[in-house]
Image 1 (cartoon, rainbow, N blue to C red):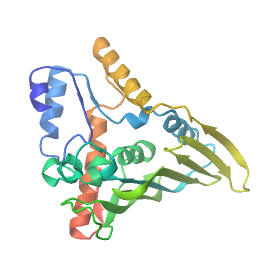
Image 2 (image 1 turned 45 degrees about the horizontal axis):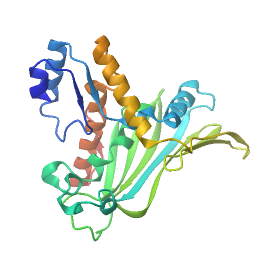
Image 3 (image 1 turned 90 degrees about the vertical axis):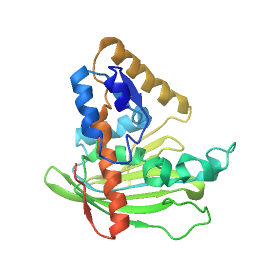
Length: 258
């Protein structure tokens, strides 16, 4: 990406933006110097369910956030059946693998919904049978700050669960919001157990997200305008991932130094 930016070329880069923070400043300087259009590949933001959740958070119709939890559990050997998963980037430390980097969409959602967390404490899961040199199951708890209110956000990422599950829930003062990104369902339940809102996108084609992402990028290049997920936005989840990795190494609560 730095080489591309140095040569004055607009660019799209997959997530995660990097696996270290060492060259981010150099890349940002080249982007600003050459006025480059750029975008990080967090296509989950183009899911209509995610945009509904964002609207709910902005509306504040259900009061402040009390807590939230995110869970994405999947089985790495099923991702690319045509290859030995041991050789894939996701399973190799030297290629930036591991569940934190590879499933960083959830990190992006957390910071987009609630802002950059203050700190994180992370723990690895028990030993699995996948035989990789990267973390394959982690649980992390973030300390978030929204409108002078401190609240926790719990995250569980796993490469070792055969039954895929990708859900999150946000507890507000007046309701519980639940979202399932496998079945593409959203529901809001008030504390009197009334189902206030329900919607589903059962005909949503996953490729729709990538098409919308590319439409925005190509239009931004044509009009020489910023995208909604530039490097300055994409690096937020990188700093969250770096803090998780540091916590896994030290066993301590770590600040997210953005």
